[in-house]
Image (cartoon, rainbow, N blue to C red):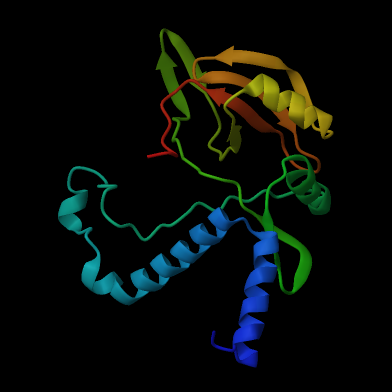
Length: 192
């Protein structure tokens, strides 16, 4: 068996330490993502499969796209309380900025984006909403999720309601606006 140099031992020790923080699956996802980003940056000009013809009838999502994720923001009156809620109650993993360990960026899981009209009429009923952005969290079993979150200190407004798109409840987020928590009954896009 070959002896490892000091540099190789240091790299191995760092890798093992990192495994204490990340599961093997997450590490593979991170490594693959890093590989894809590197490969994409080297080959973007030559290999991008999207062109103006791809967009003639709408966005062709089977082509490679330059958008890799959605970064949402919460502007909070008490940022540390909001971050603690996302970290401790929702249990979201995060990274901290090097220049400020309290400045957390959270991994929120798979995402999708819907676009709703500010004015619509459906089944004879008129719906009007101000132009806005909204954050909703989805779950598979809203009853179990609400119970689990309440056990961790989360608070909710009212009871779970049945809506056209799923079972819904508003969750109070410390220092920020409420977030909708829902169990969708609509078709899902995040797992495409």
